[in-house]
Image 1 (tube, rainbow, N blue to C red):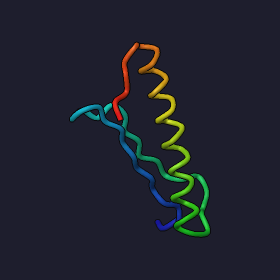
Image 2: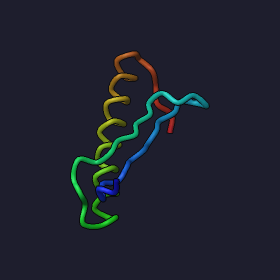
Image 3: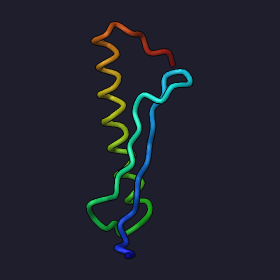
Length: 64
């Protein structure tokens, strides 16, 4: 059934190993693709900050 809700996916890796994967069906219907991409980017950024803080707690340095 087509409910006009999109799926979002993102992953984070360290070296060649994926450490976080996410696939979600959006809870709301977006009015544009840009709006949906903004929502997914916001969620992925929150996840990246969370992962970075865990690495800092484990005394691991992030290389840019």
